[in-house]
Length: 85
Image 1 (tube, rainbow, N blue to C red):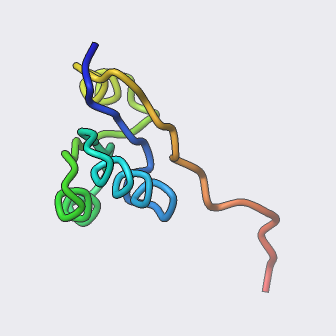
Image 2: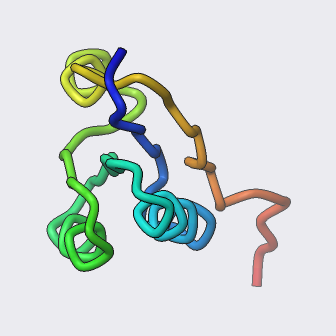
């Protein structure tokens, strides 16, 4: 079993703190990212960024290669009722 842990939503508030904690505890963390900015953040934290989207089967399968565990921290942050001005 691989010791790589994949974190979805890795550049969000929760995800980046999970990545940081995993690295500090000696784990190999891979972060699923959707932008260059997000990838840069994961690299600065010591993780391995991998571009993809949880809604895209092919990119998610690629991100999961050689992964022993998954932490799902991705979320749709656009919620609630939209109001007209």
